[in-house]
Length: 174
Image 1 (cartoon, rainbow, N blue to C red):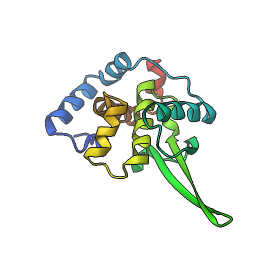
Image 2 (tube, rainbow, N blue to C red; image 1 turned 30 degrees about the horizontal axis):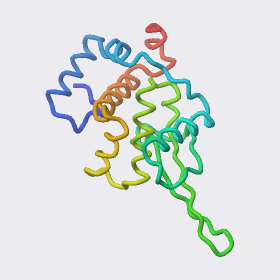
Image 3 (cartoon, rainbow, N blue to C red; image 1 turned 60 degrees about the vertical axis):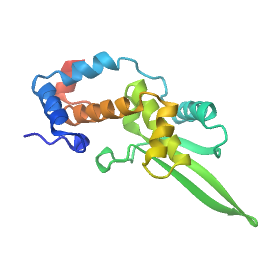
């Protein structure tokens, strides 16, 4: 039986349905039909502008962002699709904090909805550190379909595991 590492916390019946989609070679078609829209956020400058616009719309009073970049070193396998950090530096006699968001490079080519979901997730961490009720309420305030997008992103990552970009199977699909 195939391991579904991104769906480990879901009930057995959901995992069985996903295995069925994989066995019938329908997972790719399902995701392509549902998430056909690509985004145009290709570089770090565009990503900063994109994240800042979401922050300004939903979290105006949150601390300003210092840096937002795509990070090729983030490992999806280690459950790091994005990170948020606060870096404190001494400037004269004052302590200055700079907030950074790093988004895994896999999102450069992912559907637009998945980029939005991960950005919303990282922005929510600026206010709520833990994955608790308040955190998920903030996520759904910024993106009402957050939970469905998170599940579908897990399906997308499962698909990428089965058919990595550049593989012969992936090339045939295009």
